[in-house]
Image 1: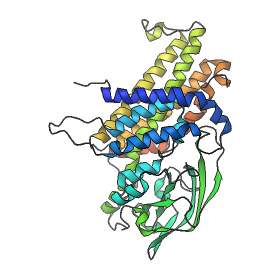
Image 2: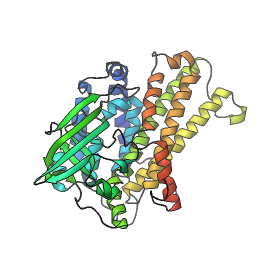
Image 3: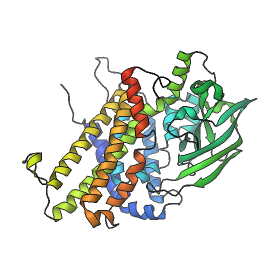
Image 4: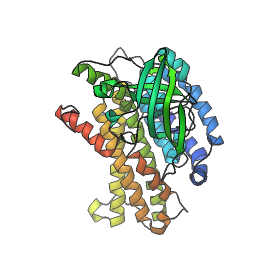
Length: 400
């Protein structure tokens, strides 16, 4: 029997996260959207301290029940919390110290020593380059070993939290001619010799979340700062496995990005319903879709789309918690939720007319914020490619 209700422990996470979203994020959302470039907001520092205190218990691996029953663990808990927090403000969520994508990578594949040294820091991740966007295998930043140090050279762009973070997980290749197998991740502390901040981007949405361009010019880091093995695989199967390990982080984080879209879309829908009800337009669920007004029908469709995306996202996170391969499901929920978030927020702006377009309400901001969610951590097209490869049993070389 399928139970689609959240258990009590996740309802508690949901309630606590909503309290932060409504009590902390919403009141300062417009303020920091207008400020855009600044240090970490003071209002977020107590939230970061609270999350840091909770992290040790979350880091413990949940034991599999001996009776074979399922686990609702850290991944599903993170999804529930992220949706609520992004109902408040997705940019502020991404600005909480200690919640960077690099932290997820270190906790997923780092050694115990690396987790101890860097796990409690605020770690960003730098993948995208001027010539390598969603195609992660096209990374051209290089890393070479000199004695007890790795030396990095290259440029990274669109690095979330690249200015404010304590360290950055940088993707680089040991040998461009070896393709995916030679791509490795390196932990680069902020201020490392040879690393420099080129600029912080002005953006359409998520303005409070700093997005940096970084340069690495003979940047030197300790030999122990590589995530995973430094060996370059020499067979096709080994190459696929090696790059798959590097990409494994996304199987956990893409559902988190999908949850961001859920929160943003739900916030827009709630505001739109409230505004429309003041004008006498209220959804009447006793009527069928085809006996409803055009605006009511749009609301029904958006609600259904939101629920579908939520269920797909929950499934991908649940699979991760229960040790099931979820690469296909992670990409499916990211593609579905990312597209849904764009469509729902823009439709809400449209339905509310000048109130949706003005800054009197958050609808226009939610629409701006929603766009990047469909792009970062793999565009719509990349997610569809991953799903197609999984369904057809084809490699990236066979299906591009």
